[in-house]
Amino acid sequence: DAKTTQPNSMESNEEEPVHLPCNHSTISGTDYIHWYRQLPSQGPEYVIHGLTSNVNNRMASLAIAEDRKSSTLILHRATLRDAAVYYCILRVGGGADGLTFGKGTHLIIQP
Amino acid sequence: EAGVAQSPRYKIIEKRQSVAFWCNPISGHATLYWYQQILGQGPKLLIQFQNNGVVDDSQLPKDRFSAERLKGVDSTLKIQPAKLEDSAVYLCASSLSTLNYGYTFGSGTRLTVV
Image 1 (cartoon, one colour):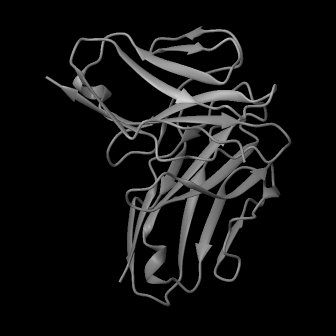
Image 2 (tube, each protein chain N blue to C red):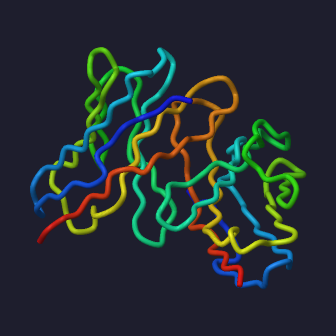
Image 3 (cartoon, rainbow over the protein chains, first blue to last red):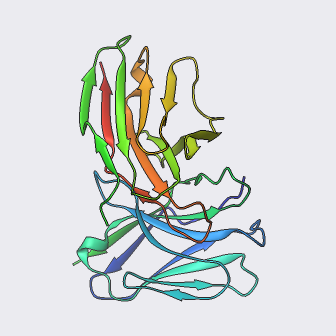
């Protein structure tokens, strides 16, 4: 199974940028890097995904290392509503592409 | 676009009873997934459908869990008989059949077995 490693928790202040790291040293060439977040009592929510190049959307930015063995999710200006568990997951090819969730990073935002 | 719909939102049953969960994915999404999320853990994949066929059910406890997606749209997950350890949130997700696309999850059904 493709695996990722994330810190258990991180803390940041409101209105400051947040950089959430993820290591995926066993990534294959066709695996996509996906990020999801889960707020309390809700299902996971798609945040962003990428393959090789950095990606931006309205929620966040994804910075992917040149060797693709690590990536960083960037929240440019954290708000209290960004407090959640963030999961970095590899979506692998081959038909059976169900996401394998780890424990994720519990992001705490201080006002 | 409308999200992934799941029902019921909550369910409480006694052990050894049966229960069923329903999921309606986003229109046009060929791939549908059921996940089990036990409190404090990340979601665990139970089964993946591609249209109305099963792609992966390797982690589905087949002695008590069953799932179907008869017309390639809605899906039902059933537990019979339920055990205390089945208490969890059951999440449904759908996606297009391409790696270059995100999943959309429903809000889940919270099952409590007493």
